[in-house]
Structure formats: structure tokens, C-alpha cells
Length: 527
Image (tube, rainbow, N blue to C red; front, side):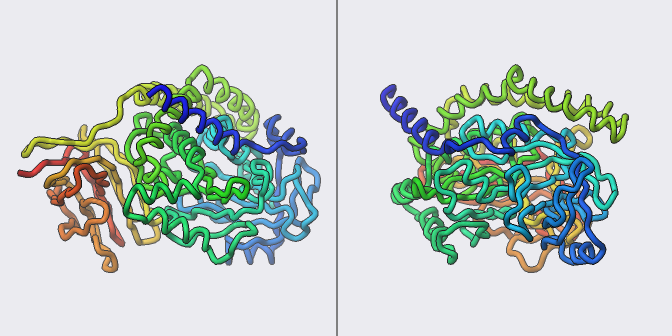
């Protein structure tokens, strides 16, 4: 056993070395991010260009960029960015992408061609992306560097923004010996089984490389699937990536939600690697499990392999110390001290409130470290093998929105915890809370109690209204309209000796809200 662990560790370290940043001369971007500068940007968009931007927010328009009161660039490309949670219109506080070389490919800002200005509407500390980036980098994972900026749009003060370098070929050149491999954008809640958008690369434009990967993860025989994946996926890098995403509770990343990621085919190793993205929601749930089976296709395949799972547990035990309060709190304080004068200049009350927000972030980090250390020391979870007629409550679920503006939250009403799903402004909601549980062979029943208010079911989906089921199953029972704690059940059978079953509580509707009582989410073994 010791020899096997030593071999796995050597393989793991070798994988990290192969993935480490390439040696290169320092440039202006290194000094900028190292110092943590907070430039003052004014972006000026002429009326005719602004009309184009308002008509199509995702297309670049011409703009002037001033930095610290002086003209930096006469013409850059600017467009709006963000998904449902962070997207804001121009007249609000929009998240922006600035492409410096859009209209002149010789231009660079601090040796960078493109950067993002994120509005941090989902992070009232302005620190999540920065902390996550530095933790990922420390673990040997390529991650965008992060700082901050004070921003004005056509003379309108829109406040403090998070500044991030873009995940483009310039970024890839910092981390890989060859930056001409295909780079794909994971999009919104998409796995590798769809045609992801290709951002760059000299590889095939027909998505043949992705198609091959997709076919491999779909192979039913696990041993055959593992053999194929090992030839095209950097397993060691994948394990490292998964351990870090789960440690910092990046619930909206690839491992847990098939979201906010890039995939790069590293030509030097002829292997796919993951690059994290959109890490503005971390440390939100101190007790989010790091041992549950993930649902993302590649992550799930890796976690099912006994040796790779062992490698994951080993890496998890190593990186837990990265979030120890004595190591991470000083960084939080350092950033807070840097931001304090900017916030004070914006609004003295905001600056005072920020002290409490920083304290709350540090508390969440401490709580996460305590739980993570305990989880890393636990033995492998065993399959549930209840006696006939016995049941247990299923706790600790994860969000899984499939429409961008679905509303998912956890509430406490009359002393009872409830998972909530609601239809957003788009008027269409396909969203769920999910949990993976290994079960033994037999017949099972999944039950729940749901309350609905004004629910109008979709008509074009197989599982309509509010309901419960397992992944891959189709249900007939549903709750619609106004219902007061309606019981729902879903019976199923496990034919294998052990099988990972993903439980789903969901809402597929065009209007309304559903509440699921946490204590009612029960699994029962049938006779």
C-alpha cells in the first residue's frame, strides 16, 4: 500500500511539473499584478457607438480609454459581459471586456491584449476572484491574474471593479510551452457532450477533438472508458483541479455544475486540461461535501477509478492547508487595506460596512477550513445499504440551474430549512437541486414534500412543474399552481451491486416558485 501511494504521489508531482508555468522574461503585467495597482479608468463611448452597444451588448464597439486622467488608447474594443447573475445593462453597472488590440493589433496594455472589468455584483468583498486565482496558482493550476480598478463610463462613476486578465493566447503562453492548442469556452452549464465554443487554437475547427473526447466519456464499460481517457486527459491535472474547486467551494465551476471553465488541449502533452473561470462565488457553504460523487462527465469518470480516486484523496489532504486561516486571513487583510481608501472615496458608509464584510469572509474561510480538514480525514464514504422499510434524510444538496436566471436559494421558514426554486425574469425555469449517493442493489423510494405558489408548468419538457426524481428518470407526479405541502414520490430500482444515483428536486415552469422541505427529502429501501 505504501509503495502504491508513493508511486501515485510521484506521478502526481510529475503531472504538476509538466503543467507548471513556462519560463519567460517578466513583462509589465507581472509588475502590475504583483503590486496590486488600482488604476482609475474612464471609458468613453461615442453616441453612435453606444447605440450599437445597446442594440447588441455582446459585440465590440469603439471606445476611448483613459487611465489615471490621461489618455491611454484612442481606440479599444469594448463589450458587455456576464451571465444572468452578473449581467447588467450599460446604464446600470455593466461588466465589461476591454480588447485593447481589437482595432490595432499592435496595441497592448501592460503587455496584455484583453482584460475584463467585473462588476462584482455577486461578491460584496471584491476579493473572491483574487483569492481563488492565487490559491489555484499556488496549486499549480493556470488561472487568470486579478486586481482592481475604479471605473467611470462616459463620466458616470460606476465604482470599484475587479480587473482580470483574459483567458486568451497571451494567457496560454504564460502557462504552456505551446499556446496554439484549441481553447474551448464551457459556456453556461454545458458539459463536453455539446459543441463548445472555440476561442482560439490552430487545431481543427470542426470540433473533431471534442467529439472524440465526448465519445470516450460516453463509453459504458468503465475500464474501457478509463483506458481511453487516460490517453487524452491530463488525469493528474484534472485531479488537482477538482480538489481545488471543491476545497474552495467553487460550486458554480465544472466539477459541481459544469459551468465557468475552459478546456485547453495542451499540444506539449497531447492532453486536455481544465482552466478555472468565474470564481466570484466561493466559500459560500462551509459544509459543502468534497467527497460526494460529482456529476460532470469527466470528473465523475475520474472519481470512479479506484487509483484516481485515491490520488484525489491524497491531493485533497495536501491542499486543505491552503485555506488555513493563518495563511489566508493575512491576504484578505492585505487586500482589504488596499481597497479601503478607494471605498472611502466612493462612500464613507460603504467603507465602514466593508469592515463587517471582510470579517464575515474570514469567518467563512475559517469555517471552511475546519470542515475541510475533518472531511479530508474521513474514510471513503460507503454505499447506502438500508434495511427494508428503513429511511434516511438526504442532506447537503447542490444548485444545478439550466436556465441562466433561475432563482435558487436556501431559506428558513418557521424554523424549517427549505430549498427554493423560482422562475426568473426570462419567464422560463429549468433548474434543480441535486445530490449524488452510492446505493446498493434493490428497490428504492425517493420522497419529498413541496409547496408551490403560482407555478405554471412548461409544456415542452418531459418533467413538468415541481417534482422529484433521479437523474435519467422521467416522472409523472408534479405540483403546479398553489399547493400547500404536497407529498411526492419517485420509485426506482438499482440493478447493479453498487451504483451512483443522482437525486433531483426540480422546477420546470414558466411562472411561480417551489419550496422543498429539507427534512422531507427522504430515501427509503422498499421490501
